[in-house]
Length: 477
Ligand SMILES: C[S@@+](CC[C@H](N)C(=O)[O-])C[C@H]1O[C@@H](n2cnc3c(N)ncnc32)[C@H](O)[C@@H]1O
Ligand code: SF4
Image (cartoon, rainbow, N blue to C red; front, side, top):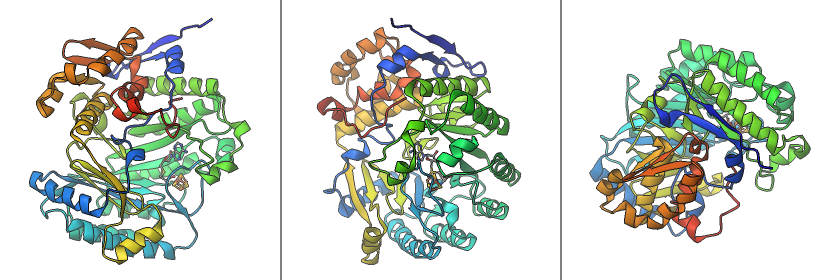
């Protein structure tokens, strides 16, 4: 017998039904298909090698006529030790010289890239991701930021959103002060889980004290926002152990929290083979951990932004969502709608006008291109007019939880009811199941549908309509 579990977890502080969540385990199970996270549309698996430097240069030149602001992403891939679960593009090494060599290449890429964009375009967003950006020495980090400032128009006085990923095990207090001085005003900490047994199983031992210290030091230096990354589905996790982690996290009171579903793909990420699969929590336990996480964070006063993200109601992300200004890119949700994203460093992805471009993933290929004076672009895609319309539809649903036909019609001059006749038909069962409501001129995701945003977006993904659903995507639960 199928027992329907439906509990409403409403957020008291926000008078906005779009930010309520309703837990329906039966629906979650039924709709738990593998699906993209839509940090881009078309998704990165559709990028191809016919796209290269020439097409990217063309898009950059065209973007200068629009003069949109810029968002810079730097990929700094080195880590001193490996966490077994890690699915990021990182290089584990004890050799600090490698950072020096990489920095020289990166500086040259900054010079090449900056020549493509007109001088005056302000950098409203900047992010150092990894890997572990603080693997670089304080002198190297200073050099990188100063070099960037020489080639791009960085904003002072905290007018930009400048963020960095920090591993709390390896950062010193002085470094946090230095980063603040370099202009960073947000940081995110890899926390994952506080349980000692879980930490041992994934080779990432870090104390509550380390996380607390970095959080407090960051606040004392005036960082505007501190964000934590957690992962559920790691070995030895249970509802009880994760409750303790959550209680500790809530007591430390970060401004934003990302709760990622552990993506276990040992065929692709070799170090994940170190993880004992028998110790992974079964699906039913993961569902309960997820439910506890969502209800616990909402009760603690966080807003559910969507997908894996939570934020305090006064955090810019939550404010932007209430005001309709939320955006989504490769770093997840962002408040910077309309910026062109420039990706720098290995494997980084740029999004300029109507193209996506991805750099070479490994250092030898990256270095070869840079040393011969070329941009290290390995693949990408130019969006068709249809891609552009669908990207906007997916962005509206995933960021705002609603689609107003008039917005799309105004931007693209199409009649949504005609253009998406097939998709609107496909949404009928979703409406019957209570995931969306439709009325003339708009679709709204319901509190039940908010945990299934990506399944709703998949209806509008042309590449999934035409193809067998790829197994490469992770599942929701
Ligand atoms: C580049 S890493 C974080 C920065 C820094 N290196 C650290 O570990 O503190 C970004 C985040 O991705 C998440 N992550 C990494 N591998 C993952 C996986 N296999 N499944 C789900 N999330 C993962 C982790 O939460 C991690 O903090
Ligand atoms: S989680 Fe962070 S520190 Fe650990 S291996 Fe991945 S990138 Fe490196």
